[in-house]
Image (cartoon, rainbow, N blue to C red; front, side, top):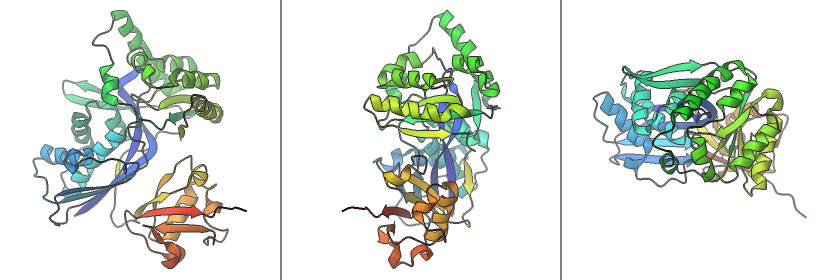
Length: 398
């Protein structure tokens, strides 16, 4: 029995929506589970942004959530579980990498074992592991969501987002310690501060729906958590100031950081994106820009009979043509299909990967799992689920 799921990145809080507001972001974790008896117990294979993790299988969030879903359904965990996961989501930077892994693990169990868990139950299970519901709810449902605890359990509602809003995430190459960031928060706040926090949370929700500049500016200016966390992020004040100066409604921490989220009108988005990257560069940090023109769709199960899912690794010079992504998820049964899939999504990258007739260039080498694709049939080379493709363009010299 096998199953495959795809889960988006998320940005939570969005300023005043502390622990209750989140949006889905167009970066993805894709995971596949196999329950074939091999006698190896629980095995986790990681690729992409997950490749640097060195957790024991039983400590991995994918496996913990898989087990949690089984427990919630009253089913034993199978003796042999092999999970292959590849992620585009930066780890520990406030883009919901842990929530994506947890949701993926729970959905894999549900799909592979037929647990018949509702999406609301998946959110409950994932929130128990994560500790808060904002990221996991956005990952499960997609879009922008509000989640709160009621006597009857968690309640999640979709939030409207004005079509002209663009979400820009400047992601530095260093993580933030989420536990330390939460430990930095005070145990209590003065009543006056709580009043301000409530009004700004309301302003955030209405500002997202209407695009009202004053409401968004107030909603992004948090008093509950950002004042106690901002000092942990080098360059935070400069990046936020640069975003506002370039025309953003405001900027704030994405989750607990280290990424910084700015919201702008589409007409100002390019300028804001360039400004925040330049501000961080001025602080000696080379950050990655993630642009989200609309909140992404939620987690979903992918049918096994569909095209294979592989990872495409790009050099820095080509990543600039793919929204700065060095790791892309792509689909297809052959290398040519994979290149066509990527070319369709990133038109600027297409002429750097193949010629006008769709044929491979002699000066661009593709390696499939370290094997030169030219020796496997070129673009006709077949690819399998989970394969890694590395693109190596020729380097001119003289």
